[in-house]
Image (tube, rainbow, N blue to C red; front, side, top):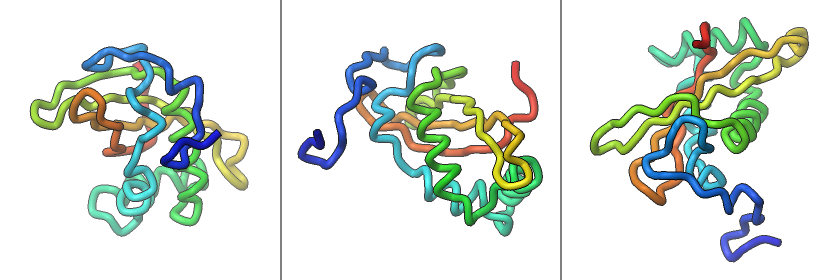
Length: 143
């Protein structure tokens, strides 16, 4: 049943995480994660962006995902962030912490048989804040 903000309750909402978040935990307040579509549209899937263009090219070449597939990629990353534990945490001073979550994403079209790992980084400024997506790109190596 939706709450007063229109959100649907979930078992994830009751998961307790420490502050700062630790490797192996889920992102804190992940149900309220934000800046996903904006970051993907303006950066990770934008071939014209000075730094993001290389990331956009990688998504297109490896997974056949481009700017028109924004909703598909955003949904995949949000689903992953809600279920996959944090794999790295970096303290960032006044910017709180950056949490890394590596999400497997299936390709589209002629690359639907491929699954690639997408490294996502989320900024959480302080205890109680929702995570904000700060980058997403294909991970070339894991470990």
